[in-house]
Each structure stands twice: as C-alpha cells, then as structure tokens.
Image 1 (tube, rainbow, N blue to C red):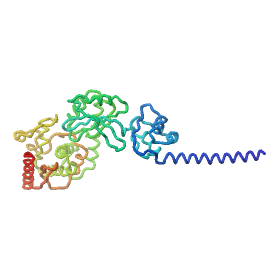
Image 2 (cartoon, rainbow, N blue to C red):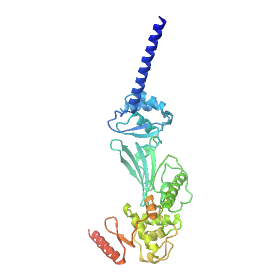
Image 3 (spheres, rainbow, N blue to C red):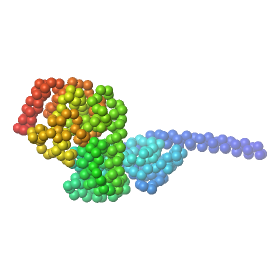
Image 4 (cartoon, rainbow, N blue to C red):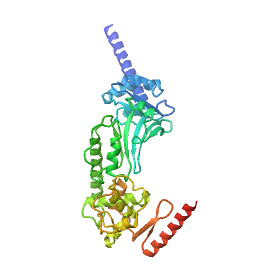
Length: 384
C-alpha cells in the first residue's frame, strides 16, 4: 500500500514538474514574443512609481496582455529596481522584454511633452512641442522669444508638470556671448554666469537639462564636449596642415563654420583657406572682420564698409597675415573635422553661386567670372 502511495506521489510530482516546466516555457515565450500594440504609444513613468503600476498602465493601453508576466520577467532579470521616471516611446508590437528594457534603460525620455530652448545665430526661440507616437515626429504647439516676448500660456502650464523634459539646443556658429546671454533668459535654469567662456570652446549640440540646473554647470558640459571633439579630431588629423596647435585648428574651424551652411562644402572651404595659408596669401574673409567689429555680440546687421575692410585690426584678415587671434564663433563637429581633414583641392577662391552654396576657383580670372555671375544674380533678385 505504501509503495502504491509513494508511486502515485512520485507520478504526481513528475506531472507537476512537467506542468511547471511547460508553464515556465510558456511564460518565457510570452515575455519575448511580439506584443499586441497596433501602433506606438507614449508611456509615462511617474517619479516614485513601481513596476506593478507601470505594467497595469501598459495593460490598460493594450501594450501587454498579461502584466504579471512582465513583472516576473523584470524581477527574474533584475531590472525591476532599474525602473526610470520619464516618458518613453514604446514601438508597435514591442515584446514585454523590449518594453522592460525601454523603461529601465538610461532614463532619457523619448516622447511626451518637451520644452526646447533654441539658441541660434540670429536669436532664440522657446518651443513647446510633443511627440506623436504614431508618426514619431514632434509637433510644435507654441513658440516665443523669451528675451523679447511674453511667454505663451501653454509654457507656464507645461513647465510645472513633472513629466515635461527640457532641452537646450545650441546652433552651430553662435558665439559664446550669444549663448550666455540667451541662457540668462531661460527661467527654468538657475544661478548667475560670471565671465563669458572663451570663444569657440562651447560645443553646439542638444543638451537635456533638469529644471533648476545651474547655468554654469551647463556651460561646463558644453566646454567639456567641445574639448573632447577637438582632441579626437586633432588626434585623427591628416599630415601637413599649417597648424601648430589644436587651438589654431579651432580658429580655422570657426571661420569655415561662418563661411558656409552647406555641409558638403565644409571640407572644400577649409581647403581654400589652408591653400591660402600655405601660399602666404591673406585669408580675406568677411566673417573675421565682422567679429572684430561686433566682438561676437550679435549680427552686424548691414554690409561691410570699405573703410572697415581697410582698417588694420587683429581680426581683419584683409589687412593681416595668417589667422585671427581667436575663433570667431563656436564651430560644430563637422567644421572641426573639415579643418583637420580638408578636401584635397587647388582652390584659392570662392563666392556665392545663388543656390545657397558657392562657386570655387583656382585662378583669379575664374574667380572674377564667378563674381560677375553672382552680381548678375543679385541684380536679377533685386529687380523682382
């Protein structure tokens, strides 16, 4: 009798183990299988939330069918404690495994409402925008210039919401003075700015910040990023360049940045100025003259006068040999790389060609012909 009972118990245990194994296999398969989402959604994880609350929210939005499996999978892979607060884009058909990776990743929000403060060469603009998960594109709901305009009411509403994230977007070619002045108008930042950082040392880029962040801390991040970019580009530079230091290369990069907004032209523009330096020709570039007149404190707002082109100043490259003493703006990575890996050309001249780009020439005669064509285009545009 006892043998019969033991035999039955052993059989039941084997069956139970088989069932348990099957249940685990089913759970693992369900955890890794494509999910039921028909289109992408934005999932918000509130500060102080937990995986149970998040899994229930995901189930309510149709992202997961069995929230318990998501929680078990997160626990088993030790990801539960890594849950981050923020707004996260969950693509269509995401598996529970992929969703857990999204909400426990680096914590950088990828959707939801975003306040972007754009610092540009001609001004600044505060944008309140929101990502449409279905198209993965941002739509601007409101915008204003915080330095000259009253804040849009939506800005006051959205800036106080904990899920709203903030970003500073610095355009290529802005000056250090423009950046520091613009940051003073960002009322979601804190702290005073002392001296203006040296020209060229701030990396144009997009920076996510937390409300209340110190302005000086953000400037330090910009300086560190530019230093890293310059060091890497200097290390990878081609041979034979007419620079003795990375700082001289940064000066050249800033000139390239101000001379063209066409990405494909940067290495050609760099080649022109490098060829000129190698042939002991003056650079003769208007942006350096303008910088000498404005000290980088905004656009000149008019054309250069002949008297200004003839006046000898440290930044007048029509009147001095070699490079100006400092950069004339904060160049982006592409311009830094162009200055340290320029195109191999014999170009010595360039002028606008009417298309937004430039016509390049190796001889003065070719250049004069290009200039004549450009003046014809200007005259035609003036007559329209």
